[in-house]
Image (cartoon, rainbow over all chains, first blue to last red; front, side, top):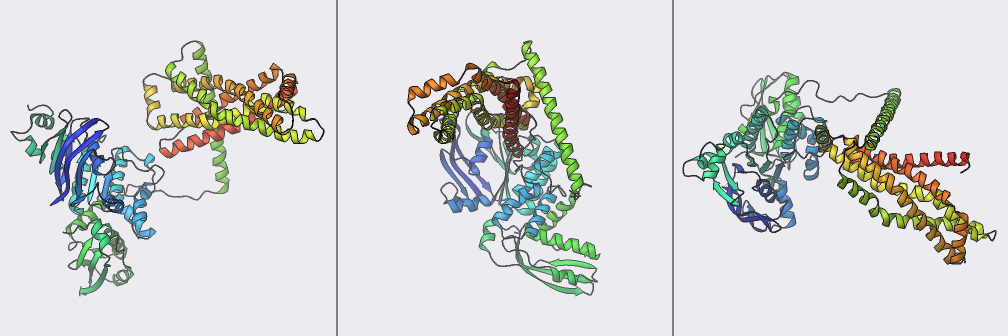
Length: 248
Length: 385
């Protein structure tokens, strides 16, 4: 079942076209990997999908509804069904971890203070940060900030979770634990996951679908599971990328 | 499918509820009914707590559970705490798969010992002590900073200090030429205010002409330097603190250090030099504009002639009077740069800390300016200047 459909999307900064003619579908429950070489516009695509940037042309539909043409209220409702984990965590530095998670809950739900506090505590426990409710983001390590960012992204039980380079800057074990966490949360909550990454182990471990963006040709050159992209007959550049240049 | 989307939540307002039964004498079965979601809210669970007494096991019946989200986890978490306290077995086998896995995940990483914050009440005596210690530490940091600045000036004189001349010129422009409009406005208005305050009194003795002396001396010796310094503290001091503070947050200061540059030489020295050069120049400009402002009031409201006011001002002022004001301006330049750069370098590593640094730079700068101004005025008086 198609959850997200992107049709003929062209992204540009002024006259400089980053990517053109992007057409792909993300199914409900996918762990969808957006990969590509540095500077190809992976993060830019993510920013377009979550409405932070407007495309030059093209369509982005969620559950069949056009996201870009939607009314202000429909768009706001749609944004509430997103959870976004930013590259550097992007936790609000003047709030504790608990307050970071509670903010949207206070804004968009009718729950009482006690329930919000417990909900925030559970979200933190899910990412392995039990007991860190009253810490400020500057007081915890980078890896913990990322996990706290994930907890905040899950605050409203989103339908779609977006991750921008979740494992960048993490050690291999933490990176792997984060991957496992993403898979576990995905299957338990039934959410759709969209990940921008170029970490090969992550791509193969968790990706169930994906696209490859090429910086030189400025469009997507491969789609499907990572294994399909790697299979014989695939795009040579994609195969080189997925094997760290060992297969030509 | 157990997952309920946010959209569905907002549409479904049907509430959640539960019923209790005892399939066996010592087993309590909680039947979850309806949708247990954030939108629906959590029912009161005190009945369950009461019914747990004397039970050996709590199990669940989810056949009538419509949908769930994190709120169900909150409810189950509460029940699990209750069962632990009552010594009852929490049997999660009949819960939906996703719920069971999430519950397990939330307890997979046990709380790290001692990570939770304990808030210990502080007595007033301890608070006084902490404040005193903090002030001593602040004073010490200031002295260290002044010491480093002195060394840095030494390196400058020996030609060893390294900073980019392009940076220096940019700072000169930002805190010099770009400050002219605001300095013009403020000093012209201050000159006008001085003239009004003085002339209204002097007119009672028919001595309006002395308003020229009052405005001229007031601007040259005092107000020109002070108003310029306060403008610079608000404008440039805050900018220095925010800029250096942001660099601290982004590890740029660390990068300078590891690349072999002294952050003091590279960042603080050019700013200090720029203000030492520019504040006196702006002060001179402010003196002129202030005298013009006073003249405008004297001529337009108190019937003095333009040449009369001009002659009286020339007679009242000597070059030395301007010199005294300029000397103050040099001190003020140092103080504004010191406050801005010190607070920037002391900045913590968050966005909020940058805001605090900028605020503190302005407050510190203005306090220092007034204190030093008063001190210099007393010294001038003792020396008979």
